Image 1 (cartoon, rainbow, N blue to C red):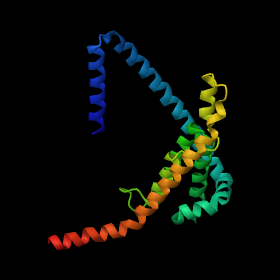
Image 2 (spheres, one colour):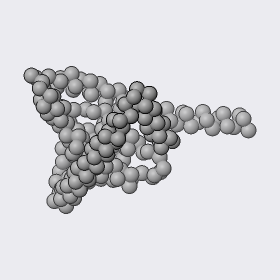
Image 3 (cartoon, rainbow, N blue to C red):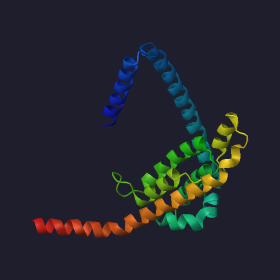
Length: 206
């Protein structure tokens, strides 16, 4: 399905360029985009390799469990199934800390390694576990205290007050994350009722 969507978008883009008489720009754009994609891929691969090594060092040296203990009160509520796995909780803590500081390039490799750990605890690998859903909510909720990457981008763009977004961003991301966690909690509570309702309908139809 995703391949069909990409081909459709590509076809529409080429068609729009041809209709507007800008076909000469297609080839340079393709080459430039390909170059940017390769640069991004190599940069991300290097970042993943570096932080994977740092995670291993933190795990072996005992730093990861120590960080997990700092976040234990909160993480024990959000991840009750993992409260005895200090390594996984430590990796979750590192990922959340990177996001709180707005370090998206750091959080990406950390999040990938953390997701591998969470999947290893998943009793049904073909479905997302509750812990995985909560972790994804925390990551995509975008909760951020110091958006360092955004501040750097605004500063490079010539903003006179690049840190002006601190308070609004904190409020918005806090509300979004809280609302998403509430919906997830409601879905978990409703799941047994939904399953029973489906079973009841199946029995009635049979």
